[in-house]
Image (cartoon, rainbow over all chains, first blue to last red; front, side):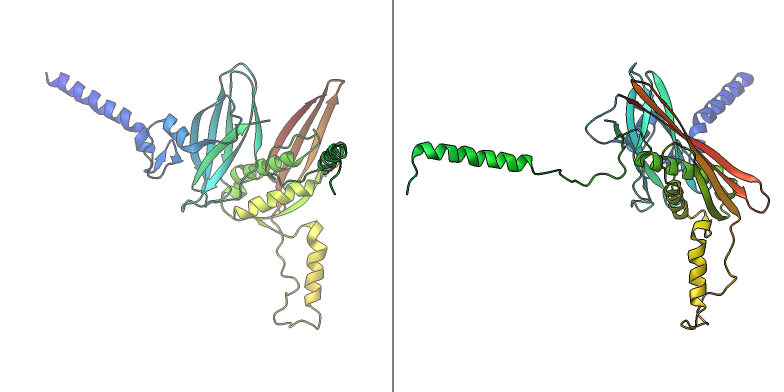
Amino acid sequence: MKAVTLVIALLAVALAAGCGTKKGFEKPGFAFGCPIGESKISSMEDLVKAKVAKEGSKSPDVEIEEIRCTTTGDLMKIDVVVHNDESDVERLQYKFRWIDAEGMRAADEESWKPLLLYGNSRQTVTTIAPNAKARDFKFIFMGQD
Amino acid sequence: MTLPTRLRVPSAVIAAGLALTLAACGGPKTKYGDAGSVETVTNQFGSTDLQMLAEQMSQSMLSEAPVISSGNLPIVTVQEVKNKTSEYIDTRAITNRMRATLQKSRKVRFATDQAEMQKQIDEIQRQQSEYYDQNKSTEVGKMVGAGFRVTGEITSIVKEDKKIKDVYYQLFLSMTNIQTGIEEWSDTKEIRKTTEK
């Protein structure tokens, strides 16, 4: 009986540790490595909603699947996975907007960068913050004429 | 005096015609645009290419060059970036943009490069003249040399037939330790542009 209880207890501990792994690595105020401030973000979907903005009238038929952040030295490094689940080629343009700790612009507005996505394909857009003042960001995209 | 009705109608027509002519001959309209927008007027090297290459190369240097990412604030000089394409490209515009981005990152300092050296010497020499207070003038022999030099080249491949013109650009840059001759960082960035005629 004691052995069964011990096994159950061990399993419970292992399960708790397993569930806690993601949160264990996450610093407060961060989700998937990305800064979220006071926002309550518990899923990748929430993070994408918080960090992505569409501009312009032409909306490309693509989905922002994932955003992951890390740091290189004191600079924020970001990966954004863009997915085109249609069979047609999609052309879009994107830029990052950098925000400092006070919510002000941390750098000049970036130029738009064109991106081509083949049908049924994914591309990871990678960037690094222009300076250490940049503490938060927005990924902005729109269709290409 | 009232004009007869048959004269009034042509006058109105003439006035309307004149208004239309004036509107049509108004000439080209000028508007301010977005300097950061994607430019696809022709497939020659354009502003978007310059902005993209400079930005991507700066990001690569910041994240991949150990001497920069280590936070040691290295002193760098920018040498010539050769234009090996078939068109005119001001490669200094690319490196100037990179310099501005990197300097704002506060991760790199730039020493006077070859192109600016004469102006630097002229200013030091000017301050040595009798018109200046020598106690406050810049001293000769106090300039700091760079530890690293950045150089590179831009090449292109152009292919064209009756229907399509395809242009491929490749920018290669490298950063070398001047003391040791060891290449500390290098990267290539590419752009492909296709025009259907």
